[in-house]
Length: 378
Image (tube, rainbow, N blue to C red; front, side, top):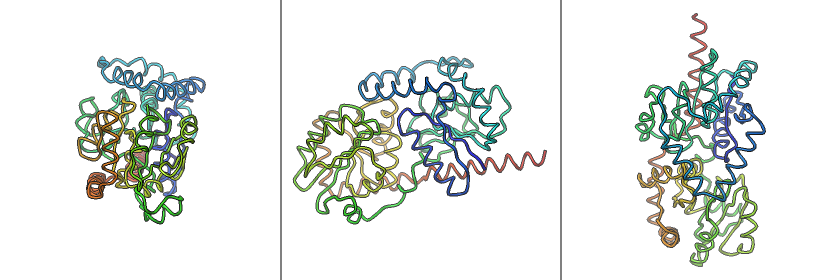
C-alpha cells in the first residue's frame, strides 16, 4: 500500500503531524511519502508564502491574529469558491498526475491548502483513491469547510458540533485525536532521564517552549519567570529554530536557565519536567497531554492557537492568566505545588485517550481495503 501525505511548510506542526502518521504506517509496512502541497502549485510561491508566514508569526503576532480572525469571520457564499481556493486549484493538474503516476492508494492532507487542492482534483478528475483531512488544532479552522474529503479526522468528540456548523457531514467526521509521535505515549523515569540530559535531580523543572518558530513577546516573560523562580527550581527553555532568540538568551544561561535551540529530544525533556509553559500550539499541547505533563499557556500569537487555549482551559486541561505579572505568579506557584501538579496530570491522562496516528492508520487502511474489495466485485 502506498499513501501520499500532503503538508505545508508553514510552521513545523503540520510536518510533525505528517511524520507521526508516517511513523505508524511504516511500522506496518505501508509506504508513506510526505510532500509540500504548495510546491506542486509553485515551488517559488511555496517558499515565498512560508517565509512570510514565519516573519509575521514571529515579528507581528497581533497582525497574524487579526488575519486569522478576518478569514474565520469572512462569509462564504454557498456554492462559491473563495479566492484562496481559486488560487490553489491551479495545482490540481500536477497533483492528479503525481497521484496517478505513483499509484497512491490513499491521500491524506494535514493542511487546509493541501485539502483545497485535493478537493479540486476530486472535482476535475475521477479519483479512485480515498481522501482524508487531518485537523491539527482544537477548532474548525478557516477553509476546512472547503476541503471536501471522504473522511475528516477531528481532535475530539466534543468538537463535533463546531465542524457540523461549518456544513461538514457527520458521516465524514471521525474523532481520532491529533496525531503525535509514539514516543509521547511512553514515559521514561524522571530521575533517569534527568541524568541522561544533564539536568539536576533535586530541583523542580519548568519546561518553556516558544514553538518551532519562537513566536510572540517571549523574551521579557522568560526573563521575569527565571528571576522569580525559587532556588530549588530551574527553567529549560527551548527556543526552537529561532537562532536570534537563542543567542539573545545565552548570557542568561546558568543555574536557573538551561537553554536549548532545536532538539529531537522533546519527549525526554517532557519526561524530565514538572510543568510546561508554552504557547497553545495544537501539536505541542497534544504531546504534553499524552505525557500527562501539566500545562500553563501563554497567549502569544492568537489565530488558531486562541481556540486551542480556550478548549484546554474550558475543560480544565491547562491554566492561563490575563496579564504577564499574573502569568509569572501562576507559573511559579503551580510549579511548587505538588498536589496541583498531580491533579492537572490526572485530568490530562483521563481526558486524552486517543492515539491519533494509530487510529488514522487504522481507518485509512480500512478504507483502502474496502475500495479494493469493491473494485474486485465490479
